[in-house]
Image 1 (cartoon, rainbow, N blue to C red):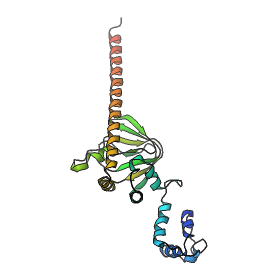
Image 2: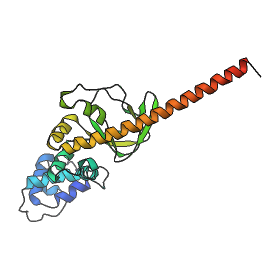
Image 3: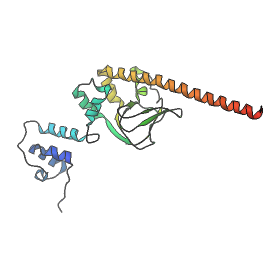
Length: 231
């Protein structure tokens, strides 16, 4: 029996551009190029292989409204990167989805990858206390990555990251980030500034929590005295 093929809409729109491209897609899928939907237009002058690469880049979108490359370009940390570097970076990243209350990683684990939040919200947990919340366009994991630069010993994750709701994240692996930081030191400096600001914020938060715990302890102590020695 003859097999039927369903070509996704983004792929269909690209296939219609070039008859030569139909032959490439047909050979990849093992079907007759004439069975691929769309009118046969005159061949374009550009290399059909380039069109094929662009085609798959177009399909690699985050949410049907923005491409991976556009998302990276909107991040302040990468705004200084040339277009060709952003393109290579978009091809190197990994997109992962997490369910609510799922740990991305836990305090004390080892790892150098950095995570960028596309959708959703996470909480930063240190020693069982929630230190902060991060949402779309924020990133985390920079502390461990920075600790290992310049031949230094890799430090464990300084906090746990747990999702609050459904999250979609873009993962930038350490080797890719190493290469980019060597060529564009401004990225590393931006991460250092972010890490510095978060350290100050976390210290302030920790001091506040310690104060609450101390006041609560004092209150219970006074209540114990009142019970044992009523006035």
